[in-house]
Length: 251
Ligand SMILES: [Zn+2]
Image 1 (cartoon, helix red, strand yellow):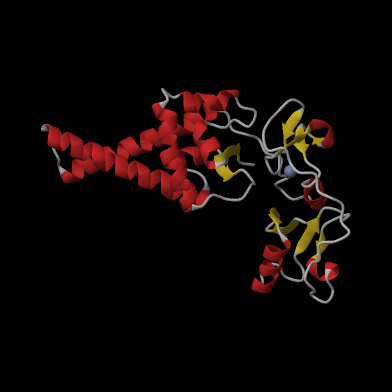
Image 2 (tube, rainbow, N blue to C red):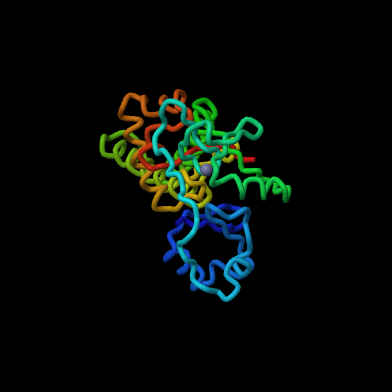
């Protein structure tokens, strides 16, 4: 039985009983933390669900309908968790589809008037392209300044390779640092878009590193990997598919 809990107005989970209990022991889930699982009418403070702080028991709850993991005929992506479900099992809210599991927290947030209603708006090819252009300009200026300061001449092949190599390292550090830290390079920040994990959780430095290298595949496929974003329901580029990430507009 999968558990969910709310942290900073974000839905976390699903968690198995053991993992859930682990978070309770660790203090991540506190008595006042809102928790929910299939079968519960609404999000409830942990203390009210388990007055004695008892371990959750997997019982008497209706079976969860497993998500269809891939897009298919009649399926839609949930705007909250990104998983696919049969369209007729989802509800629509202001143009976004929301699955049964995400519904309670979603409407809880709506009710509370949380600024982030949560409906995801995926960022398409052109806005992402604009972000890349901004990043390229920033990196180019930075590289020019560096060349000026170091006074390196780009005349021998060795110097040209050195400049290119250092440029590549700076590029990697720039992308991985900013994407890992906040999901957005300065270019993406300027375009108000952000990389997140498919389940809505924030990026980590590890995933940002993987995504940086996966992006090379998008480049090496004659940019087809990038263009894929323009034709995908969730606007995933090849590297988003590989790393299970999404690029969304910030709200
Ligand atoms: Zn969902």
